[in-house]
Image (cartoon, rainbow, N blue to C red; front, side, top):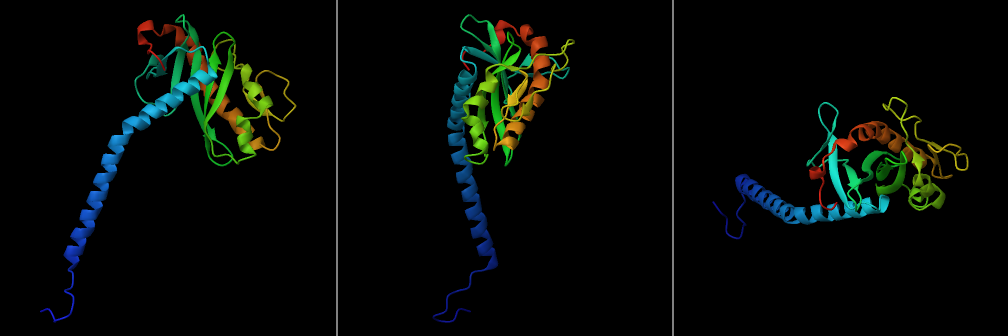
Length: 228
């Protein structure tokens, strides 16, 4: 019985229904927003990646995304891979190189990079950091330091005689101590980040370069995409 002047008590069931209703409404709003923006986000990501590919391998005009079949062969793929790999073709539709994404742990968090491999030079000939949370003014110097960027004009990634592995592992050395073309001249004050990038590139190139060298020529012209 309600007492005059006293607010009626809300039942637990009414409160539960209200909470569930609000939660369902919020979930619906999130889903609608996600679906309405997903295409735009995907388009922006593709544009960003295309621009990055052009940065590391400027002669690229068309690309084909590739992956590994169950038997280890290189095959075209339409899957959205976390670390996509592309064969790149020039204006004359000749194989210009390969562009690969790779990721590994830096000083603070994972670093995601994009790099270009030249079949003609057997070397990494372009490099770009896609995502990094390294310390401003220290670790992030790997993105702007001229002598460090110069490492990737022709970083040796040639294979052993049997073609099964890199002839020499890609390693980072102390600044000023580079003596071989497969070494990365590091940055004093950003040693951990420099070494991390050496490890990232070595691990990725060790996995992919033998396969690319063996199978890239088997990708048919019709598998190529128009644009990037």
